Image 1 (spheres, rainbow, N blue to C red):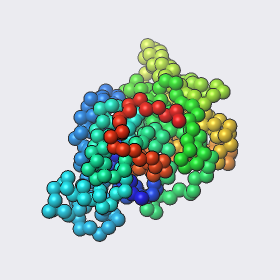
Image 2: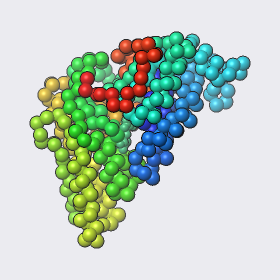
Image 3: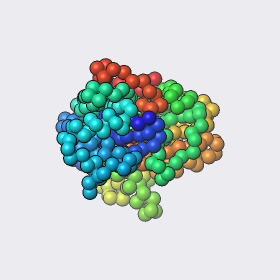
Image 4: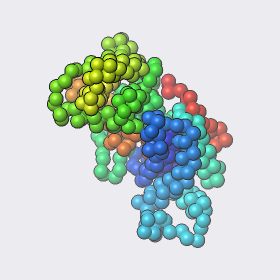
Length: 373
Ligand code: KG4
Ligand code: ZN
Protein backbone atom coordinates (compact mmCIF):
# COMPACT_ATOMS: atom_id res chain seq x y z
CA UNK A 1 0.00 0.00 0.00
CA UNK A 2 1.34 3.42 -0.99
CA UNK A 3 0.53 6.37 1.24
CA UNK A 4 1.08 9.96 0.19
CA UNK A 5 1.64 12.08 3.32
CA UNK A 6 1.70 15.81 3.94
CA UNK A 7 3.25 17.49 7.00
CA UNK A 8 3.04 21.24 7.67
CA UNK A 9 2.81 21.57 11.47
CA UNK A 10 5.53 24.24 11.94
CA UNK A 11 8.28 25.64 9.70
CA UNK A 12 8.77 22.59 7.46
CA UNK A 13 6.66 21.89 4.37
CA UNK A 14 6.98 18.18 3.71
CA UNK A 15 5.53 15.51 1.45
CA UNK A 16 6.47 11.84 1.16
CA UNK A 17 5.37 8.58 -0.39
CA UNK A 18 5.96 5.43 1.62
CA UNK A 19 5.17 1.84 0.70
CA UNK A 20 3.74 -0.49 3.37
CA UNK A 21 4.72 1.89 6.17
CA UNK A 22 8.43 1.19 5.78
CA UNK A 23 9.90 1.80 2.32
CA UNK A 24 10.49 5.46 1.47
CA UNK A 25 9.83 6.14 -2.22
CA UNK A 26 10.25 9.89 -1.82
CA UNK A 27 10.67 12.31 1.07
CA UNK A 28 10.81 16.04 0.28
CA UNK A 29 11.27 18.75 2.92
CA UNK A 30 11.38 22.52 2.42
CA UNK A 31 12.04 24.71 5.43
CA UNK A 32 11.59 28.35 6.37
CA UNK A 33 14.01 27.86 9.31
CA UNK A 34 16.51 30.46 7.99
CA UNK A 35 13.81 33.15 8.20
CA UNK A 36 13.44 32.51 11.94
CA UNK A 37 17.15 32.66 12.80
CA UNK A 38 17.20 36.30 13.86
CA UNK A 39 14.34 35.90 16.33
CA UNK A 40 15.64 32.61 17.76
CA UNK A 41 12.20 31.00 17.35
CA UNK A 42 9.51 30.40 14.74
CA UNK A 43 7.30 33.37 13.81
CA UNK A 44 3.92 31.70 13.10
CA UNK A 45 2.72 34.25 10.54
CA UNK A 46 5.91 33.97 8.46
CA UNK A 47 5.94 30.17 8.74
CA UNK A 48 2.34 29.99 7.45
CA UNK A 49 3.04 32.27 4.50
CA UNK A 50 6.07 30.15 3.54
CA UNK A 51 3.95 26.99 3.75
CA UNK A 52 1.65 28.43 1.11
CA UNK A 53 4.62 29.18 -1.12
CA UNK A 54 6.19 25.71 -0.85
CA UNK A 55 3.26 23.32 -0.67
CA UNK A 56 2.56 22.71 -4.37
CA UNK A 57 6.22 22.42 -5.53
CA UNK A 58 6.99 20.08 -2.60
CA UNK A 59 4.15 17.69 -3.25
CA UNK A 60 4.73 17.76 -6.97
CA UNK A 61 8.37 16.78 -6.43
CA UNK A 62 7.48 14.05 -3.94
CA UNK A 63 5.13 12.39 -6.41
CA UNK A 64 7.46 12.67 -9.36
CA UNK A 65 10.46 11.26 -7.48
CA UNK A 66 8.48 8.31 -6.20
CA UNK A 67 7.14 7.47 -9.61
CA UNK A 68 10.56 7.79 -11.18
CA UNK A 69 11.93 5.39 -8.59
CA UNK A 70 9.26 2.77 -8.99
CA UNK A 71 8.45 2.85 -12.70
CA UNK A 72 10.03 3.62 -16.01
CA UNK A 73 7.95 6.65 -16.88
CA UNK A 74 9.98 9.04 -19.05
CA UNK A 75 11.33 12.02 -17.11
CA UNK A 76 13.04 15.26 -18.13
CA UNK A 77 16.55 16.33 -17.00
CA UNK A 78 15.25 17.54 -13.61
CA UNK A 79 13.72 14.13 -12.98
CA UNK A 80 10.18 15.37 -13.65
CA UNK A 81 7.68 13.03 -15.22
CA UNK A 82 7.24 14.06 -18.82
CA UNK A 83 3.57 14.69 -19.18
CA UNK A 84 3.55 17.66 -21.48
CA UNK A 85 0.00 17.14 -22.72
CA UNK A 86 -1.36 17.90 -19.25
CA UNK A 87 -1.32 20.88 -16.90
CA UNK A 88 0.40 20.35 -13.51
CA UNK A 89 -2.95 19.87 -11.75
CA UNK A 90 -4.09 17.30 -14.31
CA UNK A 91 -0.78 15.44 -14.05
CA UNK A 92 -0.95 15.37 -10.26
CA UNK A 93 -4.48 14.06 -10.39
CA UNK A 94 -3.59 11.31 -12.85
CA UNK A 95 -0.42 10.35 -10.98
CA UNK A 96 -2.13 10.19 -7.57
CA UNK A 97 -5.10 8.30 -8.99
CA UNK A 98 -2.87 5.68 -10.61
CA UNK A 99 -0.08 5.29 -8.07
CA UNK A 100 -1.32 6.20 -4.60
CA UNK A 101 -3.68 4.22 -2.34
CA UNK A 102 -4.34 6.75 0.45
CA UNK A 103 -3.55 10.25 1.69
CA UNK A 104 -2.28 11.05 5.22
CA UNK A 105 -1.98 14.46 6.81
CA UNK A 106 -0.78 15.96 10.08
CA UNK A 107 -3.79 17.55 11.79
CA UNK A 108 -1.92 18.63 14.96
CA UNK A 109 -0.48 19.56 17.34
CA UNK A 110 1.17 22.58 15.73
CA UNK A 111 0.75 26.14 14.53
CA UNK A 112 -2.75 26.78 13.21
CA UNK A 113 -1.70 28.80 10.15
CA UNK A 114 0.86 26.20 9.10
CA UNK A 115 -1.41 23.22 9.80
CA UNK A 116 -4.27 24.68 7.75
CA UNK A 117 -2.13 24.75 4.60
CA UNK A 118 -1.38 21.01 4.75
CA UNK A 119 -4.81 19.98 5.97
CA UNK A 120 -6.77 21.90 3.35
CA UNK A 121 -4.42 20.75 0.57
CA UNK A 122 -4.74 17.10 1.65
CA UNK A 123 -8.53 17.37 1.88
CA UNK A 124 -8.71 18.84 -1.60
CA UNK A 125 -6.55 16.04 -3.01
CA UNK A 126 -8.71 13.41 -1.27
CA UNK A 127 -11.87 15.05 -2.59
CA UNK A 128 -10.63 15.32 -6.17
CA UNK A 129 -9.01 11.87 -6.38
CA UNK A 130 -11.58 10.09 -4.13
CA UNK A 131 -8.74 8.50 -2.13
CA UNK A 132 -9.17 7.61 1.57
CA UNK A 133 -7.57 10.10 3.97
CA UNK A 134 -6.03 9.40 7.40
CA UNK A 135 -5.62 12.16 10.04
CA UNK A 136 -2.28 11.95 11.88
CA UNK A 137 -1.02 13.17 15.27
CA UNK A 138 2.42 14.64 14.55
CA UNK A 139 3.96 13.77 17.93
CA UNK A 140 2.92 10.10 17.94
CA UNK A 141 4.03 9.85 14.32
CA UNK A 142 7.63 10.87 15.18
CA UNK A 143 8.07 7.38 16.70
CA UNK A 144 7.43 5.73 13.32
CA UNK A 145 10.66 7.15 11.88
CA UNK A 146 12.10 3.98 13.47
CA UNK A 147 10.22 1.77 11.00
CA UNK A 148 11.43 3.50 7.84
CA UNK A 149 14.18 2.59 5.41
CA UNK A 150 15.47 3.74 2.04
CA UNK A 151 15.90 0.57 -0.02
CA UNK A 152 18.91 -1.19 1.46
CA UNK A 153 20.82 1.88 2.60
CA UNK A 154 19.41 1.84 6.12
CA UNK A 155 17.90 -1.26 7.61
CA UNK A 156 17.25 -1.73 11.30
CA UNK A 157 16.68 -5.09 12.88
CA UNK A 158 13.11 -6.02 13.73
CA UNK A 159 11.83 -3.95 16.62
CA UNK A 160 10.88 -6.06 19.62
CA UNK A 161 7.88 -5.17 21.77
CA UNK A 162 7.04 -3.99 24.36
CA UNK A 163 9.07 -0.84 23.77
CA UNK A 164 9.48 2.58 25.34
CA UNK A 165 9.38 5.47 22.91
CA UNK A 166 10.81 8.88 23.75
CA UNK A 167 9.69 11.75 21.51
CA UNK A 168 11.89 14.80 21.96
CA UNK A 169 11.10 17.69 19.65
CA UNK A 170 10.88 21.48 19.69
CA UNK A 171 7.47 21.44 21.35
CA UNK A 172 7.30 18.02 23.05
CA UNK A 173 9.10 15.70 25.42
CA UNK A 174 6.90 12.63 25.85
CA UNK A 175 7.32 9.02 26.93
CA UNK A 176 5.12 6.26 25.52
CA UNK A 177 4.74 2.55 26.13
CA UNK A 178 4.40 0.73 22.83
CA UNK A 179 2.91 -2.75 23.22
CA UNK A 180 2.82 -3.40 19.49
CA UNK A 181 3.15 -1.44 16.26
CA UNK A 182 -0.22 0.23 16.80
CA UNK A 183 -0.73 0.23 20.57
CA UNK A 184 0.58 3.37 22.21
CA UNK A 185 0.07 4.51 25.79
CA UNK A 186 1.26 7.91 27.02
CA UNK A 187 3.28 7.60 30.24
CA UNK A 188 4.48 11.12 30.98
CA UNK A 189 5.77 14.30 29.47
CA UNK A 190 7.04 17.77 30.07
CA UNK A 191 5.21 20.05 32.47
CA UNK A 192 6.61 23.20 30.87
CA UNK A 193 9.32 23.61 28.21
CA UNK A 194 10.24 20.74 25.90
CA UNK A 195 13.84 19.50 25.59
CA UNK A 196 14.19 21.07 22.11
CA UNK A 197 12.77 24.31 23.46
CA UNK A 198 15.36 24.26 26.25
CA UNK A 199 18.11 23.87 23.63
CA UNK A 200 16.60 26.67 21.53
CA UNK A 201 16.07 29.13 24.43
CA UNK A 202 19.45 28.58 26.07
CA UNK A 203 21.19 28.82 22.68
CA UNK A 204 19.59 32.22 22.28
CA UNK A 205 20.92 33.29 25.70
CA UNK A 206 24.39 32.20 24.56
CA UNK A 207 24.05 34.16 21.31
CA UNK A 208 24.10 30.98 19.18
CA UNK A 209 21.89 30.40 16.14
CA UNK A 210 18.47 28.83 15.64
CA UNK A 211 17.65 25.97 15.88
CA UNK A 212 19.55 25.82 19.16
CA UNK A 213 20.05 22.04 19.40
CA UNK A 214 22.59 21.64 16.58
CA UNK A 215 24.27 24.96 17.55
CA UNK A 216 24.74 23.86 21.17
CA UNK A 217 25.90 20.40 20.06
CA UNK A 218 28.56 22.01 17.82
CA UNK A 219 29.84 24.31 20.61
CA UNK A 220 29.84 21.42 23.10
CA UNK A 221 31.92 19.33 20.69
CA UNK A 222 34.47 22.17 20.42
CA UNK A 223 34.68 22.27 24.21
CA UNK A 224 35.31 18.52 24.40
CA UNK A 225 38.09 18.76 21.82
CA UNK A 226 39.69 21.87 23.36
CA UNK A 227 40.19 20.15 26.73
CA UNK A 228 40.86 23.54 28.40
CA UNK A 229 40.17 23.90 32.10
CA UNK A 230 38.42 27.00 33.38
CA UNK A 231 35.90 27.61 36.07
CA UNK A 232 33.26 24.92 35.93
CA UNK A 233 29.60 25.66 35.49
CA UNK A 234 27.14 23.24 37.04
CA UNK A 235 23.49 23.32 35.99
CA UNK A 236 20.50 21.57 37.61
CA UNK A 237 19.03 18.28 36.28
CA UNK A 238 15.35 19.14 36.82
CA UNK A 239 13.10 16.33 38.16
CA UNK A 240 15.75 13.72 37.37
CA UNK A 241 15.50 11.93 40.73
CA UNK A 242 11.73 12.30 41.13
CA UNK A 243 9.77 9.08 41.08
CA UNK A 244 7.59 9.84 38.05
CA UNK A 245 7.93 9.91 34.26
CA UNK A 246 7.49 13.66 33.80
CA UNK A 247 9.98 16.32 32.78
CA UNK A 248 10.51 20.03 33.38
CA UNK A 249 13.06 22.14 31.53
CA UNK A 250 12.03 25.75 32.17
CA UNK A 251 14.20 25.96 35.32
CA UNK A 252 17.25 25.16 33.22
CA UNK A 253 16.80 28.29 31.15
CA UNK A 254 16.43 30.39 34.32
CA UNK A 255 19.59 28.82 35.79
CA UNK A 256 21.59 29.53 32.62
CA UNK A 257 20.44 33.14 32.66
CA UNK A 258 21.45 33.53 36.32
CA UNK A 259 24.90 32.03 35.74
CA UNK A 260 25.50 34.17 32.63
CA UNK A 261 24.58 37.37 34.50
CA UNK A 262 26.84 36.39 37.40
CA UNK A 263 29.86 35.76 35.16
CA UNK A 264 29.23 38.90 33.11
CA UNK A 265 29.05 41.04 36.25
CA UNK A 266 32.46 39.62 37.27
CA UNK A 267 33.86 40.26 33.75
CA UNK A 268 34.48 36.53 33.35
CA UNK A 269 32.42 36.01 30.18
CA UNK A 270 34.46 34.84 27.18
CA UNK A 271 34.01 32.74 24.03
CA UNK A 272 35.34 29.82 26.02
CA UNK A 273 32.58 30.30 28.57
CA UNK A 274 30.03 29.92 25.76
CA UNK A 275 31.52 26.52 24.84
CA UNK A 276 31.54 25.47 28.46
CA UNK A 277 27.89 26.44 28.93
CA UNK A 278 26.90 24.67 25.73
CA UNK A 279 28.62 21.50 26.96
CA UNK A 280 26.95 21.62 30.37
CA UNK A 281 23.49 22.43 28.91
CA UNK A 282 23.77 19.39 26.63
CA UNK A 283 24.94 17.24 29.56
CA UNK A 284 22.05 18.40 31.78
CA UNK A 285 19.33 17.83 29.16
CA UNK A 286 20.66 14.46 27.98
CA UNK A 287 21.20 13.21 31.57
CA UNK A 288 17.56 13.82 32.41
CA UNK A 289 16.24 12.30 29.16
CA UNK A 290 18.31 9.13 29.55
CA UNK A 291 17.55 8.68 33.27
CA UNK A 292 13.77 9.03 32.87
CA UNK A 293 13.60 6.83 29.77
CA UNK A 294 15.60 4.06 31.45
CA UNK A 295 13.37 4.32 34.51
CA UNK A 296 10.34 3.73 32.24
CA UNK A 297 12.16 0.89 30.44
CA UNK A 298 12.85 -0.90 33.74
CA UNK A 299 9.38 -0.24 35.12
CA UNK A 300 7.67 -1.78 32.06
CA UNK A 301 10.37 -4.44 31.46
CA UNK A 302 10.65 -3.54 27.78
CA UNK A 303 12.82 -5.07 25.06
CA UNK A 304 13.50 -1.89 23.07
CA UNK A 305 13.88 1.86 23.33
CA UNK A 306 12.84 3.97 20.32
CA UNK A 307 13.89 7.61 19.96
CA UNK A 308 12.17 10.18 17.76
CA UNK A 309 11.92 13.95 17.21
CA UNK A 310 14.57 16.55 16.37
CA UNK A 311 16.52 16.20 19.64
CA UNK A 312 16.94 12.47 18.90
CA UNK A 313 19.47 13.64 16.28
CA UNK A 314 21.81 14.59 19.15
CA UNK A 315 24.89 12.34 19.15
CA UNK A 316 25.71 12.86 22.84
CA UNK A 317 22.21 11.53 23.60
CA UNK A 318 22.96 8.43 21.48
CA UNK A 319 26.27 7.90 23.27
CA UNK A 320 24.66 7.95 26.71
CA UNK A 321 21.73 5.79 25.64
CA UNK A 322 23.90 3.18 23.98
CA UNK A 323 26.13 2.71 27.03
CA UNK A 324 23.19 2.30 29.38
CA UNK A 325 20.87 0.32 27.12
CA UNK A 326 23.57 -2.31 26.60
CA UNK A 327 24.02 -2.57 30.39
CA UNK A 328 20.31 -3.26 30.75
CA UNK A 329 20.05 -5.47 27.61
CA UNK A 330 17.51 -3.23 25.92
CA UNK A 331 17.85 -2.68 22.16
CA UNK A 332 18.23 0.97 21.21
CA UNK A 333 16.71 2.26 17.96
CA UNK A 334 17.55 5.72 16.63
CA UNK A 335 16.42 6.88 13.19
CA UNK A 336 19.00 8.60 10.95
CA UNK A 337 19.14 12.35 11.71
CA UNK A 338 17.18 13.42 8.61
CA UNK A 339 14.27 11.21 9.71
CA UNK A 340 14.38 12.48 13.34
CA UNK A 341 13.59 16.08 12.35
CA UNK A 342 10.25 16.97 10.77
CA UNK A 343 9.37 15.17 7.54
CA UNK A 344 6.33 13.47 6.04
CA UNK A 345 7.72 9.92 5.73
CA UNK A 346 6.94 9.07 9.35
CA UNK A 347 3.47 10.61 8.89
CA UNK A 348 2.86 8.05 6.13
CA UNK A 349 4.28 5.24 8.27
CA UNK A 350 2.03 6.13 11.22
CA UNK A 351 -1.00 6.20 8.89
CA UNK A 352 -0.13 2.73 7.55
CA UNK A 353 0.24 1.11 10.98
CA UNK A 354 -2.77 3.00 12.40
CA UNK A 355 -4.93 2.90 9.29
CA UNK A 356 -8.17 4.69 10.21
CA UNK A 357 -9.37 6.73 7.23
CA UNK A 358 -12.26 9.15 7.74
CA UNK A 359 -14.31 11.21 5.30
CA UNK A 360 -12.36 14.23 4.07
CA UNK A 361 -15.06 16.60 5.35
CA UNK A 362 -14.34 15.47 8.93
CA UNK A 363 -10.63 16.28 8.78
CA UNK A 364 -9.81 19.43 10.76
CA UNK A 365 -6.60 21.15 11.87
CA UNK A 366 -6.24 20.78 15.66
CA UNK A 367 -3.38 22.97 16.97
CA UNK A 368 -3.75 21.68 20.55
CA UNK A 369 -4.29 18.01 19.69
CA UNK A 370 -3.50 15.95 22.81
CA UNK A 371 -0.69 13.40 22.87
CA UNK A 372 -2.01 11.70 26.02
CA UNK A 373 -3.36 8.58 24.32
O1 KG4 B 1 11.02 17.33 15.57
P1 KG4 B 1 11.51 18.65 15.15
O2 KG4 B 1 12.25 18.75 13.85
O3 KG4 B 1 10.36 19.70 15.10
C1 KG4 B 1 9.31 19.73 16.04
O4 KG4 B 1 8.36 18.92 15.89
O5 KG4 B 1 9.44 20.54 16.97
O6 KG4 B 1 12.44 19.17 16.35
C2 KG4 B 1 13.04 20.43 16.34
C3 KG4 B 1 13.89 20.55 17.58
C4 KG4 B 1 14.49 21.94 17.78
O7 KG4 B 1 14.22 22.36 19.10
C5 KG4 B 1 16.00 21.71 17.56
O8 KG4 B 1 16.80 22.59 18.34
C6 KG4 B 1 16.15 20.27 18.00
O9 KG4 B 1 14.99 19.62 17.54
N1 KG4 B 1 17.33 19.61 17.41
C7 KG4 B 1 18.39 19.17 18.13
C8 KG4 B 1 19.33 18.65 17.21
N2 KG4 B 1 18.81 18.80 15.96
C9 KG4 B 1 17.57 19.38 16.09
N3 KG4 B 1 18.61 19.17 19.47
C10 KG4 B 1 19.78 18.67 19.91
N4 KG4 B 1 20.74 18.18 19.10
C11 KG4 B 1 20.56 18.14 17.75
N5 KG4 B 1 21.52 17.65 16.96
ZN1 ZN C 1 8.26 17.31 14.99
